[in-house]
Length: 418
Image 1 (cartoon, rainbow, N blue to C red):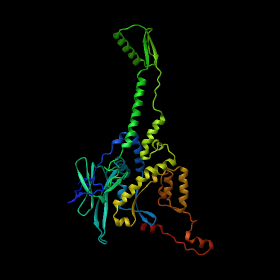
Image 2 (tube, helix red, strand yellow; image 1 turned 60 degrees about the vertical axis):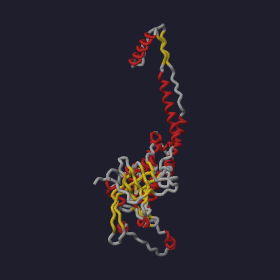
Image 3 (cartoon, helix red, strand yellow; image 1 turned 90 degrees about the vertical axis):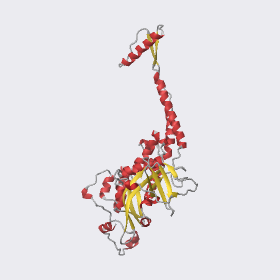
Image 4 (cartoon, one colour; image 1 turned 180 degrees about the vertical axis):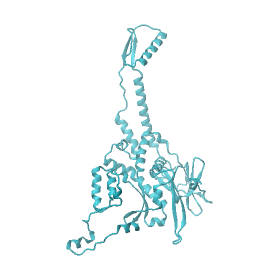
């Protein structure tokens, strides 16, 4: 059995197209790549993709308001999504598909069994595959359960319950099932006009430069020549130009050479900057981010407007489709932590360490790695905190000198229970 055999399944009998509020058939093509020939568009999207691939997908369980990381099968598959991809490659591939098509689909492979003691169905995940279908159909069976059929370029197709497909949507608006416009496609009409203007300007600049440098000077022959002699003279002049590597052109008394001054009139820089920024605004990517010369405030604005909505979409879509209703009721979630995205100076990093260290929130090796230092084996698992703290509920008793019960937490026991 090949690694993709588990992905392809047949539709259940008696299925029909799922209903839509507007009466259309839920059939969507996936080929929204018209605008991506533009280098500005590619660079803008790459800025987003390169940041998303730095995220750390983590399985957590909420204990009240405290997120507790969970070590288990789901975290294993998040750390190694499939035989072909690392975690960063998986996130990169999925984000490109999302931004290119305004929809991205991930098929999880897993097997299930029933717990003998509780009778609860258990699920063990094996892999997560981002796919690129040509066409997507939404259908339902006689009981009303929603399925999705994916058609691929090699004429293969597979039908999977929609609840088992991780579906990411971008610009989810007018379509009932898909991101993008009513056909499940990116609506790029306005952007295409700007891209055409940008292309026209660049083409005009190239033509102006070629026209300006096509004629470098005028050679005047101080004699009368017929057409045949003129052609021979021009050929001889071109030969001398080709061979004149020293920069000096040998001419005789019969000729005068008058150089032409080059004055190329091109579009001013502000106009080009305006066009670039108009394109980049579609994805909230400012020029400083594109150029890699940004401040902390500029990066924070980029994170909040361009990255955070996508991160939230990833987190909620993974949580919705990976966990059962029972698991979600117990607070299981997938969070994509942006620790690697946080842009802090050395001074700000030291300030963070000084704030968190007294509370015991940081391991010693975490402090080292935050400053770019390699972790040390002798510091593994070591975490220190200040004793100059007291439970807020006991503060009044402490000030009046009353006896205060101090609870000592056994960290090893606590960690084993988690």
